[in-house]
Length: 217
Image 1 (cartoon, rainbow, N blue to C red):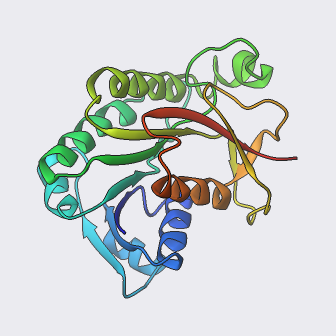
Image 2 (tube, rainbow, N blue to C red):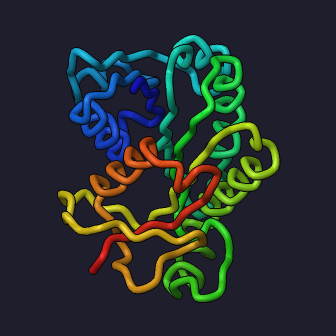
């Protein structure tokens, strides 16, 4: 399968790229800094394309002939820093997908992008009102946009808890359509998140769904 990866130089994106190549996919990494990508991963089936994410026309060409787009874009916006990365990027990404003839999109937000009864207290009472306030709010706005404006796109939104750089734990990933998964650890290895994202390419189980994920204890 031919896939395009956005956010490929980030820690989650690197896992997506590496595992996709290991699985035999052909990968186009759409990045701001090609040299950084080249220093992280080199492979015969990896193409690196410099793009400006704010320019839809930059994305259209590299997306032609691609079977799916995987996005692990992330923001470091703080408590006082406005965040619009998610809403800004989804408009250009989906616009380019339409023009490039791509219909499958898998992207990442987070537990707690919206309020839901039972949400772990550390998110609802601490992280959501403080450090992650602007990021989670913008993630939720992106999800709203996808539900309202992207009915023609076959998307899957993956909502993980906290992310760790630990190796894959080797345990099953549990899913739930909602803002969190009950009775799982509050962190998931990026390797397991990437593995789940790629697994969505071979099933229609999560088509047009927004699913929270977590690993078994």
